[in-house]
Image 1 (tube, rainbow, N blue to C red):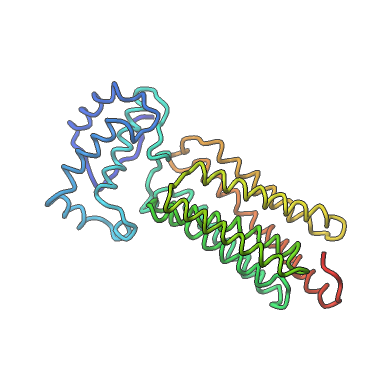
Image 2 (image 1 turned 135 degrees about the horizontal axis):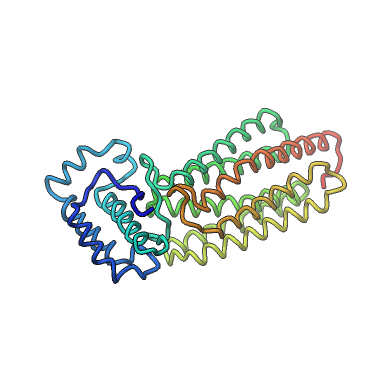
Length: 331
């Protein structure tokens, strides 16, 4: 299927250039990462020199759709996009596995969306979160002990899905950092939510101290990645660690309340699903139809989880409100 790869329409390379690049690729196709290939780098340099200066650059800018301009796509970006597909086509013609570029699989660009399936999945997750937050607010009175904590958690989650959508729409230095940092914030706030539910209702001082520690941990994490080194391995290890704390804490609470709270299973199933579905990332296959990869599948799979999780939060908030009115000790 070498002839079926997409091509950029904003910047074009002459046929002679493609032939030269094909000849150059004979000794270059053994690299495991596409952007390290001389054929890719030379293609980008040549495309930029031919299309991104002088009158041709002005022509590109005048003909570029407004949505592409607003999302920051430049002439050089278009060169990289076309040369990526040129390199993919050469790999396929030689029978090699599709390479990654800059740590990512090649995706066909839809309008301004760099990773259309992941962007759509992130948007749908955000919409599901917003819908269930509105339902929560309509069903749970503000007097419920967990009401404000859950609202704050929902806002943190909505912010994370917003930046996930932005990042998958346009991958830049800023959007990547915001996506990573906001995802970490959700996990840390989930730990705080669990702390308030399990300890803070009876001992508010404990949850306040834990909250301060979590803020310090988040600040240190962001500072290290921003000012010292953006280490992907460290970031993954840190999120896996706090994710495990979150998982075990919630599961312990579920186990302790399995005989007294009939809805406990919803919480247990949610945390198990979220951590289990994350394993989909390990599949890591080239995108189907150049759109759907393992990361997009993971994001799509988490959409229904919002409905189950907020069903648990509604049940638990109403239970806490009723027990408070009756003066019963909360467990």
